[in-house]
Amino acid sequence: MIWWQRWRYGKHAAATPLAPLYAQPLPAMSQRFADSECLALDFETTGLDPARDRILSIGWVLLQGDRICLRESGHLLVNSGSDSVGHSATVHGLVDADVAAGVSIAEALATLLPLLVGRVLVAHCAVIEVEFLSRACRALYGMPPLLRVVDTLAIEAQLRSHEHDPEGALRLHACRERYQLPRYRGHNAAVDALACGELLLAQATRINRMDKLTIGELCRRSR
View (cartoon, rainbow, N blue to C red):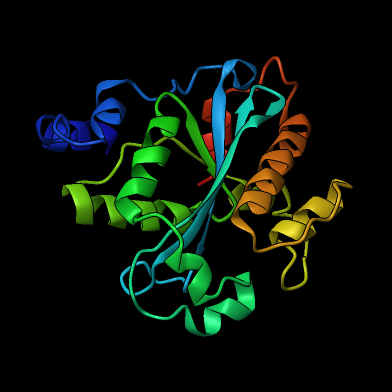
């Protein structure tokens, strides 16, 4: 799929902010996790349907191997439409006045996309971030981004495939509790990105020795 996207969209990407993602190879599957850089990412949205809902905020934090670089973290409010945030405010706490002061989705992507070049995107239930990001890129540039993705929810589900877990056991806070990670206030994009990054480091130490673990193994466990 990656090669097909590069062949299909590569020339057109050259004139868009996606150009570096198409020009530079994705992190190799054989690359050691300890030698890799990952960007833990979280979106707050008006809902879960990228065809109907919109991004309200974006949070991220950089992981360099087994280190979290808080200096390389960030948070953006996104003003991506004139419609009210509606009942979604009860989940993320963002109200219309908050997002009205945000940047446009084009400005948000101009900040975010360079941060993904040469790095692995990490998210909890990554399909949400990937689909919203892909739809936004298609709307603005006519093509999706090229991404290497690790999903901490899918990894935890694979690690616990022999367990009979109650409903909600794979939520971010529940996963963190099993690794005795501190509890954070949820549904803030910046905080959730940090929480996801910390969870990945805890999962990595359970999966394999840090000096042996590869990006490929994390990606395979994310399917």
